[in-house]
Image (cartoon, rainbow, N blue to C red):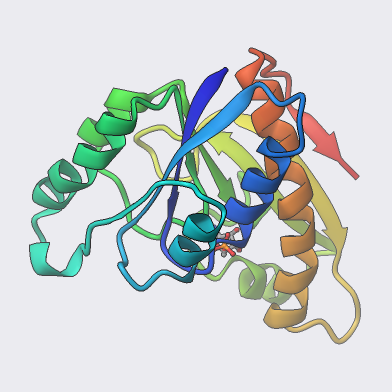
Length: 197
Ligand code: GRF
């Protein structure tokens, strides 16, 4: 069994999708920790309610001291001895030093069809570009933001009258399908990208 730690910053809907899938049997992974940079992240209570150990390290007191924040965040993560790290709505940029510790076994879900729209406000940017479709990508995390090897993608149509909110909601449904499917495959050494329609 691969031990999985999940990092969140907010509500953790992707975290929940991963936890539910790991609990549904026949899964090569077991969740060992949910950690957040925000002690008030709604996902922490959801994880605790499912009996998953949680940890929170507020990044704000560290100010611009990214290394200091990451050293504190690493404590509970290393104590949980994860094999795989899943970033799920984690909104802090990690330093190359942190990433190097987990390179090759750290995943992230990004709400665009990478390499299009790395960074923020992805749905607004797709709408403004007049794209016909949008979607989400699960990729390996490397030092370059939102640019690691793609492990899976799911596509949705952009519909007339779509707003960033309506598009985000449509993509989020696919995120909750894609991330669990990719984690299962990744844990079994399958890295051929999974393309969901
Ligand atoms: C999602 O759009 C995800 O793609 C992005 O953060 C948003 C919220 O994620 N990374 P969650 O509901 O906290 O999992």
